[in-house]
Image 1 (cartoon, rainbow, N blue to C red):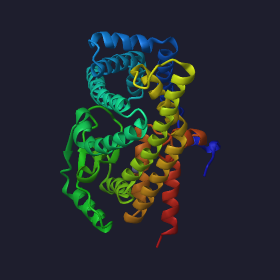
Image 2 (image 1 turned 45 degrees about the horizontal axis):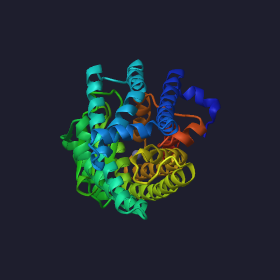
Image 3 (image 1 turned 180 degrees about the vertical axis):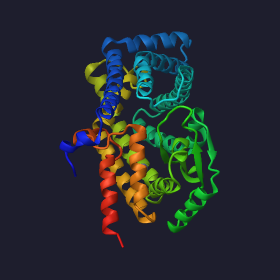
Image 4 (image 1 turned 90 degrees about the horizontal axis):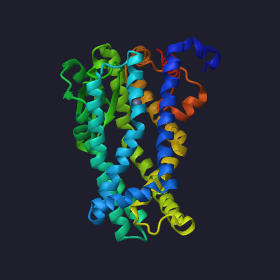
Length: 380
Ligand SMILES: [Zn+2]
């Protein structure tokens, strides 16, 4: 593998600047969220919010939870809005976005409403379980959240994604034939391939495997379908099919289940510690402790980021190898990777630690090198 000496030649200063800025934006978003939760807890403002919620709810617990959650979400949106807008501008600065300001604001509104509906339903469920089962709440809540995660994974492509993007079944007969052929060779079958109208918002290209069971599908961005050769699109399809054949979505849910189990256990421990040692809350069911609950999960997911990304990169390498084996020629795979890197301003060769901590996909230079090595060893 070339090291940093040749990295400079692979990625232009512009590409490196764009990716560095995006990384810092992500870190800033995390820190702002983290700081907000800490401030609410340390200053006791979370108690004031709870009292306001109770006042507005005429002392109804469930309604108060809802109002508290709404205030918390509104607060975190206000605090994070500047960074959101910076992200919107950043894509424009690098000519990567087709989205107008009005469309962006509308997406922000829809995103907020969706978070409010889903978030408040989950928090209501959480505090209902805490009140009913104060001893074993964390195991029961974990099981409940797992069920919700599976349901959301299934509903995402038919209910959640269409809130933000248009999708339609792929019309291209040639491409459909290729997919059928690919999946027959794999001894599997995919319910559908959908065209994802990404170009209304972005100039970037993308593809993904989504859904569970009867909603399982491959989505291909129109920005990819319009600019890539049929052989290149087939290489991308073969990669996504690799995720399907290797059951990566199910495996990811399994890993999430393990992580959230630890998360709920840690949250139970932290909440008890806050009640018994710090005396900042009187009971578990005092929903003013929600910031501490969220904080526990935030810290855990930050600490586990390198491990989860390593697993994701392992899955990506598996899907790539699946593609190498099932396409006639490695050349279109390599050219599709290079096109994706150019179109998305992706770093071909990020530094080792950046890849290790932040990247869910192996660096493009590595994926291309693996493809070429595979091509060589299987030539003739
Ligand atoms: Zn992939």
